[in-house]
Length: 467
Length: 75
Image 1 (cartoon, one colour):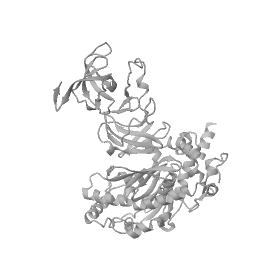
Image 2 (tube, one colour):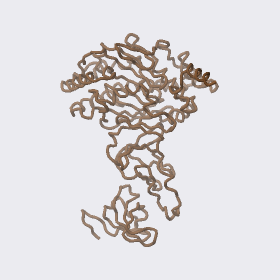
Image 3 (spheres, helix red, strand yellow):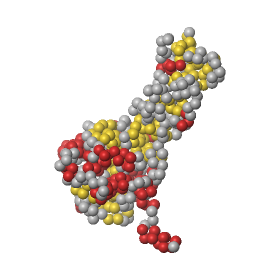
């Protein structure tokens, strides 16, 4: 399927009626360039975690799409995200991964910025500029919106975008599965160690799609399951609880977020997990018991892979990580993987989890290596002119999602496919690309915030009443 | 032209002379090799005031008058 400008993204390249999506959206350089403006310059993007910048002057060099940004805490304690580019000639003003500073100084001509972004130093200000430069106009470029949510920091370049929690919608409960404590207390997560960063030769949407909830590719991880890389020496994760759960795909069509999740029966007792260490097993048994004692729907959810549109992947439980798929170009993605633990977990538990996390995820992680093999070679094999004529198929489970899903007193938002018997569906992938196509076509956020628009019937009634 | 001064090594309390002839005491040093924060001890013209604190550009520092060494000032 060649790119067809007259048919639009939605009907031409992302055809959700037939369940076919053109390979062009993965390998076409023009489409990639448009994505930077239409998707990444308008979406809420994950920038970092507050535990990376606990003190005034702390900073962490991050990214938003292709843009280099600085996450920092100013001298008054406020959190900021700035474009990492000097206002004079564009040089990066911060070239360290992280640290503490009083100023960000451009090494090119020496312009210098305070940690609140203000331009405070201009060489030869009196002599060359004759004190005439209005320094207040040339502070570091700051994001239009910033949100710190349970320690995580999110930012958006578009002032017209909805606030972050509205952008998340009911998907917030799935993000909470990473950010709340294992025992259910709010916001207990802290970053474990540094951020793993590496570049993979594929389009960013390959991993984004995979983490949206691809249960169909489990065969890829057969060797990891056979080795028994999991924390109990069996499989790659602890699966004993899953025998009692309902396994679901949950997709929010108006937001573009989607996930796998597991729902426990109302009075399910915790199952044995982390059996490689009696101490760690006992710690998690206690935490699970506490979690299920707490009120709230999340006490019955077990987290599994999911994706916040456009490029943030969740893995709430085993391992507990969050990944960002930074686009480099149409054919390369820089992966950043953040690992989390409860901040007050015993040191031995953290050490045990560190070993398990890096055994599973990251460039040396066995499961992540399996995934990268698939993404990288799928991308390479889709670039040729013949390959581009043939779209991928996303027909699995079309027409089988239901709304208002409820089981044993627990309701799920959005569109749900019960995987307990079905095993797999491509509802999450269709959801991702539906939203992607909407972003690519929409002129502004007004068109994207469909949840703010009254339903058609209601709108007609209002119009009639007004006449 | 005198040898360039490496401002990275200037400790708090060090005294330096600027190209304008002003004498400045270092009050903090971010260590980036480009800027230091200083307080004017004397001025050669009316563009600065004694007692003012300002960011000082490395190329403006032409001489180290005294340097803090292990907590003691030496000439």
